[in-house]
Image (cartoon, rainbow, N blue to C red; front, side, top):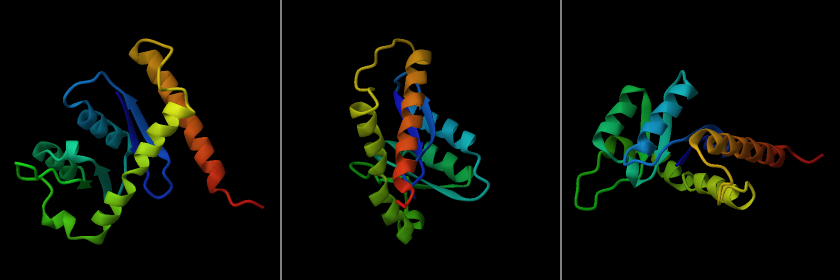
Length: 147
């Protein structure tokens, strides 16, 4: 499974991981990437309903990270409560989190990651990281004003 930590303002990839698929691989990779990011101030983390788990949300809060995670309240109580959802930044994060799907779409179409040629976590991980570097370079080129 490929995992990406994206910066919301410009849609650049900050960190990436490739892991074996498991029930908690996404959340475990997220915590690893947050440690690597090493933010020295409070940050927010957007995510889909898979991240709405009490243990994960509590861990994020202990790491000084505000969880802007989509609420999963179908037949259960969400771990994201009113102290998070009442702020306007939560609604902004819910709109911006779709940008991470653009990264994976680019990887599959342009970055030749739809069907990998290699086998093994190391080789596929190397290609995944290399493709993400190319993605960042393309994004940065588009951010520079023409002139």
